[in-house]
Structures are given as C-alpha cells and as structure tokens.
Image (cartoon, rainbow, N blue to C red):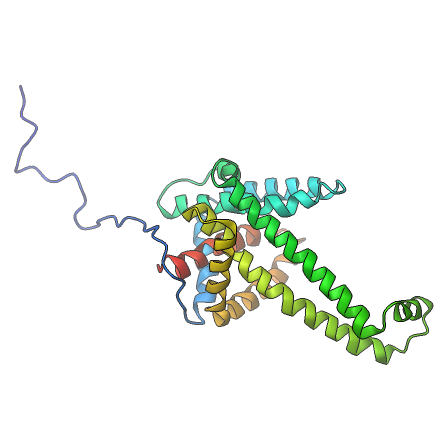
Length: 262
C-alpha cells in the first residue's frame, strides 16, 4: 500500500495566489466618488468581455420577447411586470461571472425560478408609479394650460406659440422631476431582490437610497452612456448589441460597488 500523505511533497494549492471568496453580504449603501460612475461602465465591459456571444444572445432574446409582447394590446403591460424578472436573472448571471462561473442563456430566465413574486412586484410598483405620474402630468397640464379650451385652441391652430413654450417646459420639468425618483427606486431593485431575497418595496427603497447617495457618480454615468449611445447608433445601430449588455452588466457593477462595497 502506498502512503500518499507525504509531508514533504509540494502543496496542491497555489500559495502565491490565494482565491478570495466573493462577498455577497449586503451593506448599507455607501457614497462613492464621481469617477465611480465611469468605473461601473468599465467593469460592466469586463463582464461582457468574458462571454460576449452569450451576452449578445441573451439581449437579442430579451429584445425579441419584448417586441412580441409590445405588439399585443393589453398584453404589452406584461412587459412592465416581467422586465425586472429578466433583469434579475441577468443580475444572477453577473454574480456567477463575478464568482468565476460561466454566464449561460439560462440565466435570462433565472428570475422565473427564484423570487419571482418579488421581482414581478417591483414591476407592478413601477407600473403604478408610471400611471400616477401620467395622471399628475395630465392633470397639471389641464390646470396650468386652461383645460379643454387650450386643447381646442391647439387643435384649431389658434393658440399663440409663445404661450405653448412655457407650458410645455413646465410639463417636461414635471415629468423629469417625477420620473427620476421612480427610476432611482427601480434601478438596483432587481439585483437586491435576486441576490438578497428582499421584498419588492424594501428593495426599491434601498435602491432609491443608494442612488440618492451617489447623484454625482450617476451624473457622470449618464453622460458617458449618452455619448456611448450616440456612437453605438452610428454603425447601423449595431453598436447597441455591445452597449446593451454593457449597460445591463454595469447595473450589477454599480450595485456591487454601492451595496457590497467592492
């Protein structure tokens, strides 16, 4: 019988390059510096570069599903409810990539296996928010613009253009002021639900707090994405096949930075 427990043999593990476990402990959202907004995109690119073909396939499948649902009246509302489910699945895929595992097409549907109700709840709360904002904007338009009389004047072409300008500016500012907080509450919610089993409302509250603490990085993030979006549309919109996955992955890297503190 051969003794395999040789105390003098070289260790199997690489002592010079120890593997550090990926931390999934949820921390209170931290405030980061402005440059982190760009870093989220750069780190998102790194995740994309690990499996570019699978990322593109996942995004194309998601686009096809979204397009098909959008063509069906009323059923298109399902898109708002299911979007967080798909995004949550991709967040799980990003986490697996982060841990050294492979991204698969199956990750896109992972949200249908885990925390599905809470993910749909995020979509439902977001949809309710959009409906309430629409009602407030329409109500504000009629209140500021003089109601049906102004609509009739606009249809007949009798309204003074100088009057329309300020009113439309107010409407746009109102929409922006209401939509941004809702988007902040939605942004990290699928990741928080999927990775930490939070409830819909709890995840959206925490997402809002995380975004609120990082307004400046998000401003940089938005400006960079605006520029990249313009460049991506130049080659027959083909650049969006790359930018789309990078944006999704950057949601995860932003969540990782703000909530996992790494």
